Amino acid sequence: MDARLRRVNKEIADCKNDKASKITIDLVDDSPFHLIGAFDGPEGTPYEGGRFQVDIVVPPTYPFQAVKMKFITKVYHPNVSSQSGAICLDILKDAWSPVLTLKSTLISLQSLLCSPEPSDPQDAEVAKHYLTSRESFNDTARYWTQLYAGGPGRGTPAASSGGKPSVADAAAMAGIERAHVERFVGMGFEGGKVVDVLRRLNYRGANVGKVHDDRIVEELLK
Image 1 (cartoon, rainbow, N blue to C red):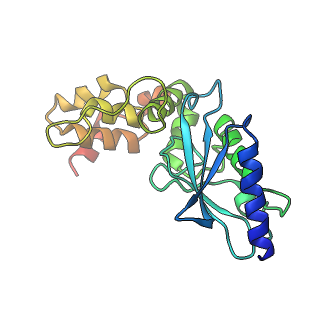
Image 2 (image 1 turned 90 degrees about the vertical axis):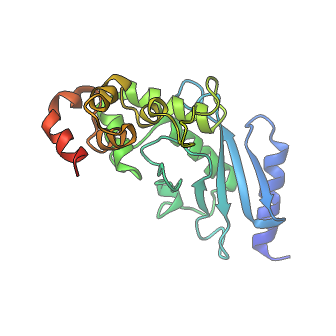
């Protein structure tokens, strides 16, 4: 048994024996080098009550090379891609150290949910939302936790007749006030496109007064 396999097996066993952290690591297709980690959303954050899964790939030179991690569970956070789950965290790149373990790295991800770093974002649009309107950001992150991580509240978004989320749900997922969307829908624009344009223009919080209607209509007409 090579050193990498011995270390990974020990780390998985240590994690299973630690019931207090509620962090789990499971094998994918019986491979000790492709894993799924999971942890609870931190208390006192919009992620509280959710359970977040992370895809883990252990490289051939582990522990001298950082593990590769990305969120499986969709999460609304400045340092996590809302599309791919890619993570911006220094210990997964140049700040990695061989003394770090799978469990300690997952704990660092859990801590990242407590303390976003919008100045070094993975998802620039989410970072803008965080910096523009914290309350609206928290509402959106909480909504995503409900939808995707099993958080308390709603289960799945209501679907329209086409099988897509309703305009109201799409607005909530983007952190856009429903009244703003309905105003432009009332002008004859399609709801989904309105949500997309308002999201791209960061039409939230104090920024609403800085984005003129003619700019929005111009984008909607493209």
